[in-house]
Image 1 (cartoon, helix red, strand yellow):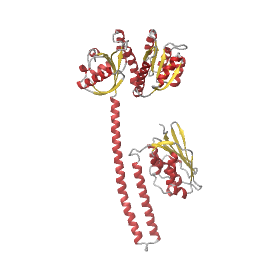
Image 2: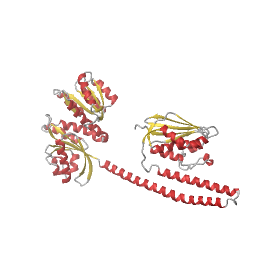
Image 3: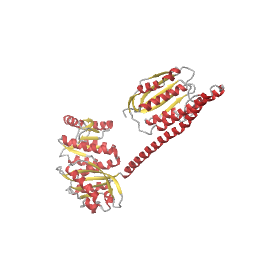
Image 4: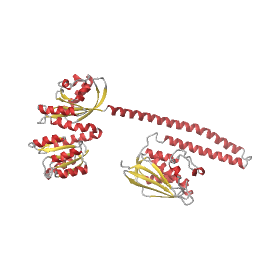
Length: 513
């Protein structure tokens, strides 16, 4: 995080224009977006408009104080990070800010390193909140109050202990020697003793030796280089159960800025880890299933092609041997049989291609659809010229896709339109429109159209409408189109009226997504 711009947004509210401009310049170097406002009222409007991740505000301002603005923001969102800027003399304001549950405060005059450190720390919380929203809601309060706590102040310690008990996650704090100063019941339940019995003990008194050594080493590293840290641990409970946790640790300091100890929380992520492991297992099983499916398709193709080849050879030999003795009817039978064999071979090949589709990860790249359409039209050049087909297009976008699959998609849709042309010259038009982060493509023709009862089944393998009784084809082309679109995270559908043509639509996510 130290060497790059953090993907968070910040609202900086300050009535002093010079201070506001100086702070804004600093923040622009470390966060993605900075919004500014000159008083609490404008700041509140800016917050509603931009919904920033972090709000930094001076406490005292005209029109509306930063404190009042912070209170209103906190009423709307408990998850936003709020940093207040205050003077040493603003004790009452600071106590009010604590009541509001602000996350950090910076003393005037604002020093750039303190501002950067506070923002980076809050940014860390924001980024992690996106992964674990439940944890962040409670952690913000815990980190704020524990950082404000003074280990030498009994009243603050009691307040901290009360706060620890109020949150539903395991929390603790310890001194620089590694002795526990306090914890909540959630933490104590993991170990199996009361919070009072934990105070004064070290990790070596409470955890198995291997785990204790790991925790101790991480604590040493944190004290040597104080900075907010996130770890993943395996923790053994007093019942012998092993759970996965995310441990968040940071140091807390006294009023002079000296490190006085470590604060931390445990968030149980066992269910999430189990889900991840299950997903990996399912992914591996799917990979193996795909490989088995592809092997089956290859074997089936070979086994089915072999007898067809044998029959075709036999017919050729019969045709050659008895060419002088055959009557026209026998010649017709042989030609029909050869045609059916060729059709069956095509069907087997397309079935194999359909079965293989999606079993291997295909390369996706940013490709212009006009180029893809040109390739599809080149492949269909003979059929297009033979049927005197006119294909027009609008400007087509660049999308993230697999070139081969997208070519097949356009080729199958255009070939389908040619197959079901009407009496009039066939016109096909290809266009695309961008809608809600996706491209909606359309392939429109003026062919014979589709009966309403056939529309819902048109993408099924081997589905044949009454029009297809007199048409050649395998019944796999549109099913392949649907498979290609699904592999590109889109959907496909058709709108058609008998004798008035058809329009096939399909969506592809925007290439920027």
